[in-house]
Image (cartoon, rainbow, N blue to C red; front, side):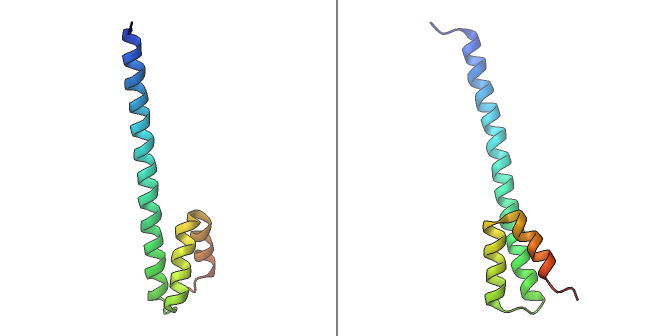
Length: 77
């Protein structure tokens, strides 16, 4: 026998799941955008493509730490 409360639990679960997945997707897209920005910024500052690729990979795999390290080591004009 199925009770009415079971339907609300299922709806609540999918609501929380949807909010969680939306948050994860937004964080993933933000990570990609900041990595691309760091790569392009490194190229614009006259660094080599190899250095810029290292910056891209560093910020892609270590988002917060990589971006902080890039801010510290980049050369301000």
